[in-house]
Length: 346
Image (cartoon, rainbow, N blue to C red; front, side, top):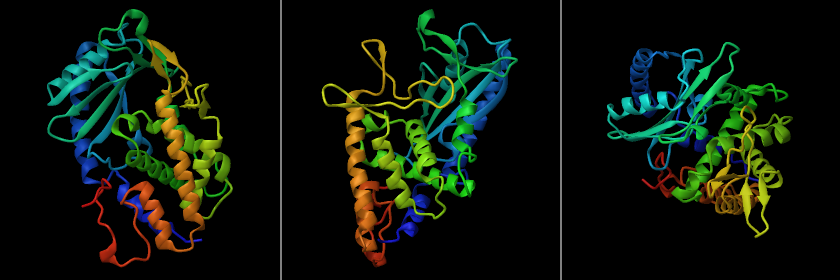
């Protein structure tokens, strides 16, 4: 069996978008400036922002360089329930107006958030609005532009609890911090695998939070007793656990849906989709079937790499599924395919 931990460590470094990167710092400058303006406008409207925090991959330290060069930044805005407007879409309209004035192209009010792309910088930004009551219960502003009253709501949700669940180390025995580092590396690896192996249309529906929840749950169940750092074996166990778990739902036509429940309020199905205007359990069957088929292939290649005695041949198998940001082992420097942060040839 080849020891490829050095290659996995380098792979992580190649794809890991940290808070110290120039790209992150530039995105953060934009975010800070917008947040400052939003605080002023919200206060003028009568419902001042009392708290704000990052969410998404930057909040839990699992961000990676995207293949298309875009950077995603998710921001939560919290207002006092006593001052919150009855219409949950109202503060989202305010956000949209601010973004329109700040060189963002076509900001959109979606059901859970306001989303926009910056015109002169590869920055995609999402804002969600919550209200918090005196018992510290938070409610997400649900609804989009033109929604009827029955499709708008302040829905109970626990975004902070989700972040804490992801970051929690108490579920691990032994060196919890060491295991959390590994668990988050595995998330980055699987996010890059998704980005390399699926079309743009499909990969955006294989949600990062869905991958994160599945990996965290399987890691807790299968690897909490292990101390030795072996990302290849850990990843193989995770993938096999996902395939053998209850996430992939067989359908009568031979296809599959992927279904993952949030571990915190509102405990909804992360992959729930709508068919003919009605919510259906799990993902679209095309998404679920592709996800399962490619997971099976990934599982096979990981197992081959585990038993392959030649580190170079094993690393070739892994580069084929993870892209050329995965370095080859035991090969002359001038024979390595050059890579960029996005995983495409330089």
